[in-house]
Image (cartoon, rainbow, N blue to C red; front, side, top):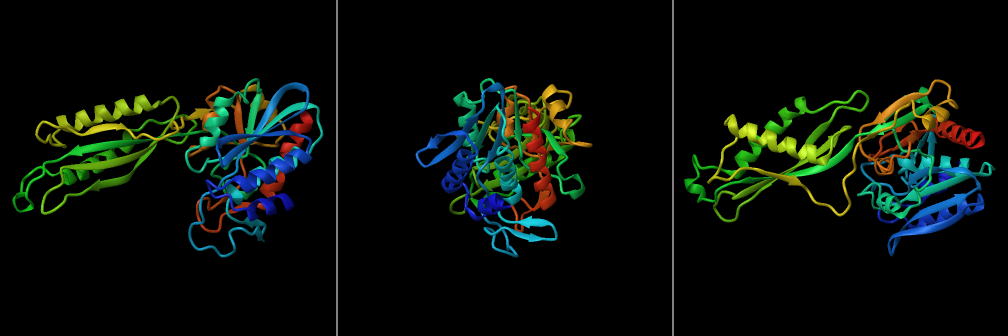
Length: 372
């Protein structure tokens, strides 16, 4: 438990991953790895490590950062607390128990080529994983094992949860035109705020039409921002609605964007939205520095997945509701799975992981390394 205790004690709220990265470097060196830093910027770096000479490399991956402290905790978020076989602490579930399981497991001696990568910024925009994707460190890797969370709280599944896919995510911006007029004369005039409200209600109705996937959770969306304002005693000339969308295989951002454009055309043709001075709502992908993450799914019939699954009695196959760094790593076409811990309250107060889950994950990873 000493490694996990140390990891939880380190404040690694993004973008402050340096201390935890230095601890992980030291741990990997003690396990015989050649370790190097991959800088994302001058103050932040991924930790990359390699060891062994035999066969194609197997890679283990985790992210080092956590979200900030949210809510009212019953204990110090930076102290590992055990209560009723549950371990509490900031990031203990997402994903310091997973990091500790990897660091413990790779102490196993083997000549098989092993790569280990720990990234920064997963809880923000995955800048670390994108840097890793571009670097070439993944070249030749036979398969990737992560220990990212899998939205499972059933403690009877400890050490058995294999996550094989995740939804993707992108953010879209709708700009709703209005007409600025004196507020005293606005009765009956087109108003950007009113049109935005109509659009939000229509987008909620659209949820029923979103695509589904045989194995991934159904696509979903929610409005994360609705904004309009005017100066003086005037009606607003424009409103903005921001929509957060989770996608399923095989959707792309272009598919989703075209779907929104077609839906807007339908709303206008049905008279549910009103043109204002010949102008209509415009929709676009909201820009950000790093690309958005796409959905993925790895078949349980994949040879790499099958070999890993054979090490677990009655594996429980699972898919994730939201994005994670593995969406980027899986886009390389390398088979990827996550041995997920059992836990809860991620991004909330009193985050926890099942102690038995953590211990069983470590055993499975050790067995995997011995089997290679």
